[in-house]
Image 1 (cartoon, rainbow, N blue to C red):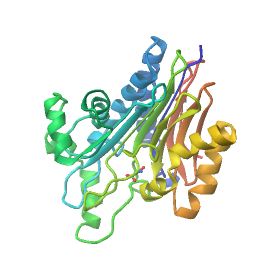
Image 2 (cartoon, rainbow, N blue to C red):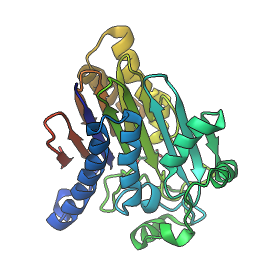
Image 3 (spheres, rainbow, N blue to C red):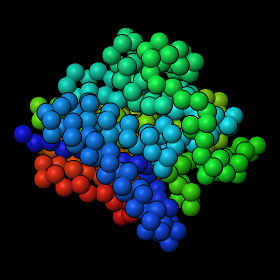
Length: 307
Ligand code: ASP
């Protein structure tokens, strides 16, 4: 049986000349650790859903990516996080938006799917649910990062917000994973801190099923990163599925159409990772880079950042 797993740590990159080899190694090591954790689940015959959750948790725990511990600051100096996951075998899904102090928002999204009777919950209500479910919480200090703080200070008091995947020196991104398990099931997961200096409880594509995350055993599993507003308008993740399902496109062709034809006219800078039923993996982007990694049946862990 085929298995496959891919992860991403956000689209856009630090300019190549500012990326030291030591820094690049830190990112790639974190991506590889996430792959190893998820791959271990798949090798043990575990479910794709468990594999993507395990991989995303590793990336949420890393300070290098804009999710969980490494989440950016919003306009109020807080960390509001969004996450979602979806199971391709039964189209069950769970998501949280604008949650604070939750160590692993992806674990909370999973609990929403399994225990809440809902798909998407948000804000203080989601926090209350997390508390009830005994989900691990952390104080504000846990999420503090000097780099992110300086990043926020630059935009503080202005109307500008900063997309973490913008091609600036200070770049880190949303995280995600997609997997095919040995039972032929697909799953996808995405987690983010959103945009620096975001306000009005802005919610991006990451917790929106069909926009930032989608999985369906009949076609593919998809996790996106990029300019969230555009990905919502393009219904990007679901569109990859739809192009395969209704038009019969291959995974690679469907991803190409979405990333290079549908998103650019909507200012949709970014990329996505996807896997199909045969274990084909596509990692594509329309910007300078994508923090990414994949592993398949050969057990070889491959990571990359630039094109
Ligand atoms: N898509 C995320 C959002 O708009 C940001 C990112 O991918 O870096 O919230």
